[in-house]
Length: 456
Image (cartoon, rainbow, N blue to C red; front, side, top):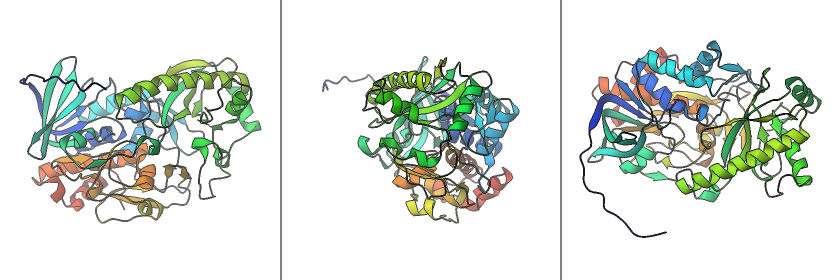
């Protein structure tokens, strides 16, 4: 790498907006944060780098927001559940194949999110990439964005980092950490198919139903369960790719091509194909992102060819679309005022400053535990407060925690829980004229109850 450097000339940047609460990133956490803050009665601005809201749900194509849900599952509800219910009401969701949830249509949710943002009075700012924080000492007072309009500044009384990678927190000087490449969760390329014979496909699934026990063996798919999951149905596809490797259609080293399908439609669409899992990708490195976007699409086409040859109903299948970008599960995390632990998510952690609950659902690092017994853990407000900077809350998968706790809190529904808590906290701290870290969580909990969130 060249060590040549240039010096940018100093320049003035226009402040194009001044707002009460600024949310950076509009995935499940950022969208929830913005709407929750607006419903608490403050002015909110939502900044997003892509041309739609929704993050993983729309940009990546992850349609199964609550695929963990079963009869005994206990949840926070709130905006995470509202995303699902509103999608169903607007014709942008279908019943999910392995749970008591609805699978959210990744394209349709773009419209759902537009409606939710407009109805709540959030000011939308799409097509703006976060470039740098605006600082007053150690206090975050806004951000600088890059767009077709160049560099612009947005100032705010409170800032929420919902970038997923702790971008604002990291660049503002907060204490963050990130595992080495080889320890990160695999990244994925999501894709959707057209031209599938639904009747024939489902007959094949019925003739050879897969369970979570079938996930065992082979790279990404060595899975620890609690045992109760082993005989439950899973929409899992692995045999077509094993056969393709055996026949030389897929190279032997690509034995991680396997995974789940989401929903098969009468129209012949087979959506939310979560089959491509690639190790050693650092989602904060644009060179890695370039390499793995291209490699992921290559592997997806191999997977489609294998499905055509070895899966009933897929003989005429064709690619409908890829997600707009990679699915990143794991990058930076903040060092928070309280960092979640493996014991918290496995043993029903309880906290006086809880801002929401999440069922005992752990999915990642070789563990899969589904919430079928009513067990759940609480998430403390302190988990959103980064060390090293002021006036900033962090929501989503970059909140503080250890490796196994991240396998629970990274999930989209949990990101919506932390987002809604962050939005309410930011708004109430403004109304009470107190610092974020000094806010009594009981005030947050009162508003959470008003917004139909369970936190106990």
